[in-house]
Image (cartoon, rainbow, N blue to C red; front, side):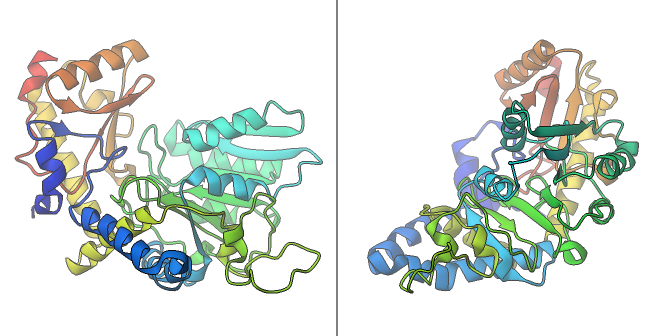
Length: 387
């Protein structure tokens, strides 16, 4: 089935190009344009009262929809922000930096975490343990061993690694390996949310889960969220007025007050346009009975079609042998090809771009992403003979 009619504006704007970077910049469905106009109209209608309107209507609607998608039973534990870095740092502000803080993570985390924790590691009281993700078949065992050995204050890892597409298929088991109840566990779900089926049912009282709409949720930048563990009573040092929204008119006590649900990790004033776009996309999918499972089935089918076309091309560099994750049972929604150097990878990406085949790369890894707007007819690799 073709879903291209959802994306007529973006497809028209990129006519003649093959866009394989939806793991980074996903085309927006047409409904998001109307959603942005609706945000303007509602802002004009409610003016000063719009914040109350948003938190009474928009936020609960999105909390309910997202909670169902990620398999949690507590929609009120979801909190929104403009980016995941803001949410990440708010979680990290709960740690006690008056003593040494131990963090166990991997060598394959996205820059929001990697840059921040690397900078923090320049301080004497941060002990960062970075576990290599490769070889993938032993990753989980090695990661659990590091957790057991170092008894960290914070465990941070991705559901799907951004630089390879490898899917961690035993998230629950890793979480269960953390025996210290005081250890904070954060799962970066950005490359899994709305791409790979996700169910936090058995760990919803234990993990912080971060994600957003910029990639597979297809609503663009500015709509990120965190699931906060059920029963969490932490008091983030990095906090904003949204964290006590609804109680601002009550008398102040001597201690800073927090909401009793996920909103305790909220920040401050943000542009809600992106949340309008996200709601519109999720409503579109609901109307067409398009579940994450169906999206995943479509995308993985497109990957198989693409690889078959790639095999037929006989390209000497971009081929199955260069695939980082060869098993599609543990692969996300993009194909990653690894080459000898960053220069070679950049040259390939530029040569592809010259043929209107749009990809992206990180170091010596070239990525091809797939989405709902891809069809068998969309894929044309005849130009690879010129690359």
